[in-house]
Length: 349
Image (cartoon, rainbow, N blue to C red):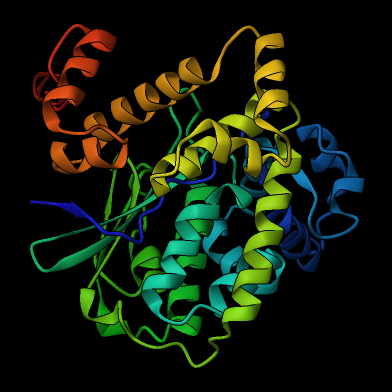
């Protein structure tokens, strides 16, 4: 049975237009220019303002980035251009995300940071971590109602992730077991096998990197708790800035508090730097109250966990703040009309 580890905190969700950090776009543009290809017409074709490539840290709508990738494949004739871009990608393009992970005490803590802040890389992304049958799995999937990234973006994400795990998490080739890619099988899969260095399967529902769990408690030589904490705080602030309205910020903060077992109105007010009275007034102006927001968040997380994972229902109930499985089951039936076990069975068909 699959069990979700303590390091698998609820990810920070950003409710904006689905965007991706521009680091990969910068490297893709550089790869094209190195081949003598004029990038400006391709950016124009994709509807990407060249100013978005003027400095690191800016964001690009994913749908426009997909057009840019497709144009790059057409101009270069390289079906594996995502793998080529990954070779040229500098991990420092990820800024605080990279420094927070690198400064973690162990591989396990580095994954914790990856899961919490994966929205920095793409606001469509949700990362999870599971262990089953003596192996560990990093699962990167797309949020509900978001379109699947293009194959080239998936290739680049997989190759960059593996490279980061090797270079900064002290993982070696024999630590990896297999990788599943949510993209059609290419005509020459040996290029993907060579680039990723382990058995590859295609056509999965998510990007899955499987490896030996023995690596999780390895100490990282670059550990620095102060740097990790400072950069984690920067990441929270950065993602808060992407959540432009109060309701999105309140939902994101309450999601973290719920996962920490502190989902109270007082704790939420403190997290938002306001008083409980002002929080109540603001929520009333949005047409809801704290109990409604908490119930909606519990419902959203419960449906996602029950549908998409094999995590024990008792664990889900505990994480969501229910006193026991029976109260969780009653709430779940109120939300969906069916018991959580029946809902999970129907979703797996």
